[in-house]
Length: 362
Ligand SMILES: *Cc1c(COP(=O)(O)O)cnc(C)c1O
Image (cartoon, rainbow, N blue to C red):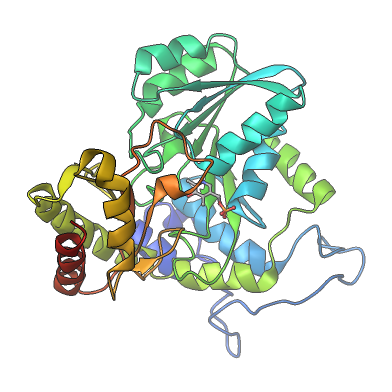
């Protein structure tokens, strides 16, 4: 392990490459091994496979160092969301963006329908309205940018108001990654990730994680993970760690590709609207054509050879989908909206494939 005092001063790129490694000693591997174990010799710190695993720990060290807190890995992003939402007491009010990740909104609706809590969905671009909604909340859930509307929340202001109300502040940082936004430095208590997306980055593993800046809150959540067993697979944690080593390279390349594509798409005749927050690799486009926009979007996603029609995001490979094909997508998302997850391919190849698809979609 690197000396933590020097690790503090190093840049994220160096942390991504160097954190979570075995000690540099003769015959030690440079990479942490995949430890397949359901139990350990008694009286040490680990004891049983549900309580800890050295491969998870290596992943957690890297993400914790990047976000600036203590990390816990989970079996998926949504297992992490469920564990965090379980922090609030019966009948509590939870404020969340109406355009938060669909699974998060569905969990809130499910908990509300069973009388467990009250969900108050807000427009997070309306800082004043969101602040008012926080008055009697126990937990304020933020996501910025939102998915797929790509709205930006004023995290610092909302966190301040939420804390005055005594609420926990949680930020789902999946889209921005800790390389573009560090919510714990902006007032959040917890950061949540679907590591399935950018962190793992290769479309081959599902994993979730949270990072806490408070030791007591970390202990409570570690206790919940121990108890309910929403633990990561060892191989998945190792794959995500392998992915993290190149996160900075992948995010930089996806972002520069996304920027170029967003600029060109803005002046394309078949596009009514381009949503790009100015950073990251996700671009949402709304096709022109009024009532025909949904059909055009459906034709577009079937007409490319490089862009893959698939859900999910944040992989090396460029993917896209019309979001309203999902029944659970809110009606406030336009029918003709296609979310692009821009990968790390050559941008001219991506543009040529997209342009011929758009020209053929009319
Ligand atoms: C995918 C996603 C999730 C859910 O994560 P899974 O790993 O699919 O369970 C949560 N939040 C955001 C923003 C996501 O994109």
